[in-house]
Image (tube, rainbow, N blue to C red; front, side):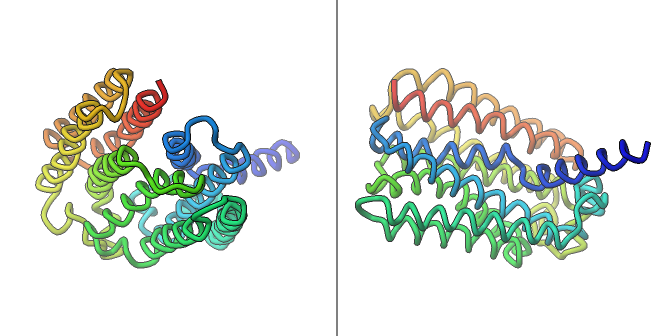
Length: 298
């Protein structure tokens, strides 16, 4: 009986670290980096650079997520009481140590990449350090700025596309800049919706989200503007011949999903509905990434 309980606690701890990591977010950022490399040089990309780029994006994103849980641990007592730290599975210092470990792995991987790539190696390291520095600043202080903090997060989400080009020794192509901007817009909409979901807890940390400064209803309209902008601009690549027609079916699904989120968030700007919409947004982002990849290689 005691042995079974110890095993459960052990697995509970491991599962807690996995939750803090938010592997889906990390995988999407790793995939965005690979996408940037493939769009830039095709499948001729060095497999070792692919591995390093994925590790860099995955671990630095994971580190940022762990930092977020650490600095939001008191807010999460209200907003997300089932998160690993509030429920007692992971101690705050363990989350912080995990964040530092992941940051070391990510920045070390970026350093190896900068020494491996034949050109623009210095930019690889600069971009990695600046992006992680921005995400760390957001968690420590930037989140309190509300909408400006939302833009910081979205900037970090857009960077992996560009990093993918730098890590294979090239500047990003125009189509890659468009993809990065689309990711920036759609993620900003998602961040504003997260603010609607987290109103009660954010008040404790004096986070000036749009949902608090305005109200949830008005914030939902602003979020919708970003989603609609992303939808409208997503058809620029096929219009200018940047992608193949294979891009269209996947991006149509993503656009329909984003419009659905925009409509239902405005219709019901409650915290409960906003939590559902922010999670659903990741699904449509996944379709968007698929559209970027398929439209670029087929």
